Length: 178
Figure 1: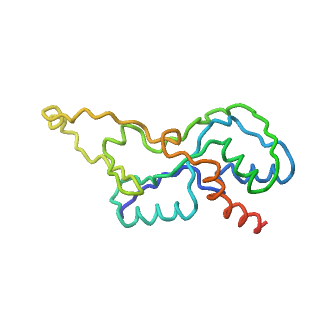
Figure 2: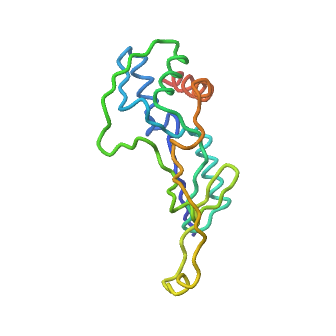
Figure 3: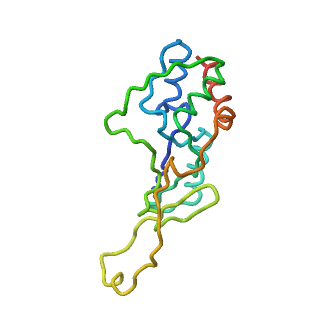
């Protein structure tokens, strides 16, 4: 049995997504509560999430982690986009950061990038299968390459119009279900 891991950002309109809460608040004409408008979140459709799992099934080996390359958006632009989609003016109440909440999502750390394979639409973090014979690592070093984290702050940022295009069908489909 091979066990691979997939790592996600925000899957739009899933249980962990804030978008259904925003839509509910907007439709009930309530204040939309946000912790900080400048926060960023990765934007991934359910189809993207499924494709990530399928890619991991096809290309994974035991212990590897797979990440979908995804664009991101600020909370402010998500809310503006929902106002356009729902054709309404939105009133916002900023409530401040919650305990443990991240300002930007991180899907890959700079340390993980050192052992990452870059595919067109995905990253694969190879598992660390080194043995404990550290002498092998003292005689050979690795090149000094500057790595950075892969975050919702430094990935492609969606514009409001790109957000509207991405969110429109998903929001309308979910509204028709209710």
